[in-house]
Length: 160
View 1: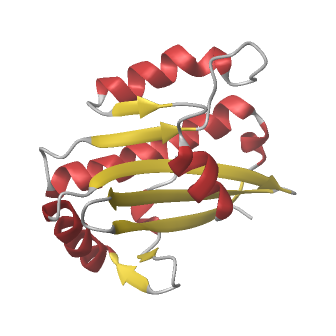
View 2 (view 1 turned 90 degrees about the vertical axis):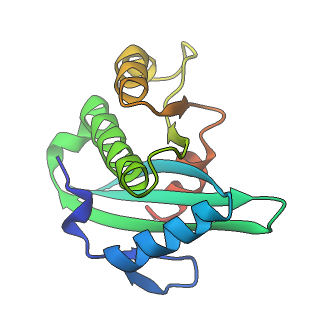
């Protein structure tokens, strides 16, 4: 399992890097401005490597807040060719990110976005009950396809 703290910096869309401490201070400030918090991770296989990107997004329409921060990991591990291993790692990273927010702001509702689907055409359907139990059991709201934009849109963009 990947430790989210293995990477020292969170990166914002402009490319600026924030240390973990700086990021948590910024996150707390955004939460105090009543931003909603969304977390998601996506991954992409590239040869013998798998690239993971974890995102924490903040949004508040009324206060014109729409930003996110991410960490990216390149892992040389052929085990991630197995879709269940890959999704398990994505959920692991997302739950770690959600826990970061819960630690600095325990009453903040964090929505975890996981790029899996419930329809029968989706390869990840068999993991629905595991993922739902895991995320809900940790106390977070879960969004899956087609509503998991933090994972399939923002995080996906950073796996390329």
